[in-house]
Image 1 (tube, rainbow, N blue to C red):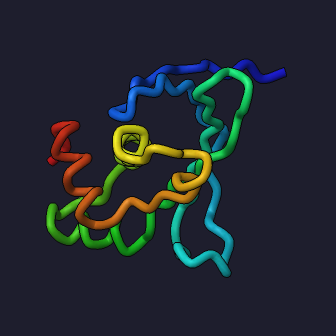
Image 2 (image 1 turned 90 degrees about the vertical axis):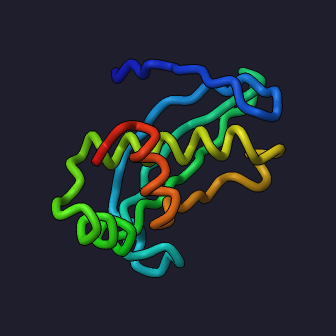
Amino acid sequence: MTLRRMKAYTGGQGYVYQYYFVGKRTALADAPEAPASEYIFDVTWDRKTTFAVSVFLPEESLRAWATRHGRKLNEAEQYGAVKMRLFQAFDEIEDMMAKGRRLVVSEESLEAALGTLGVQ
């Protein structure tokens, strides 16, 4: 049995979200975000209702960042950017269950997230 570490984040909308990382996979070929990696998190704000949130990290965003910075991102840096995108959604989206289930890390949000994390 896998034990998952539940983490908490207080969003800008006033909700205290609890979440844990479920896993990463290649986005399905017919997904509008493809080609991308899909990071899946289980999220709750009331400890009763849990729902999945997918954060897509498109290959194009990674390529653009690598071109600008002269190197590729490692797995930990990619995960950090994905988590920052999740936190951004917690801060900005009022109803995550209805409107925040599919998030994308754009080139701009990747640059901003990694800048916040101090990744050059």
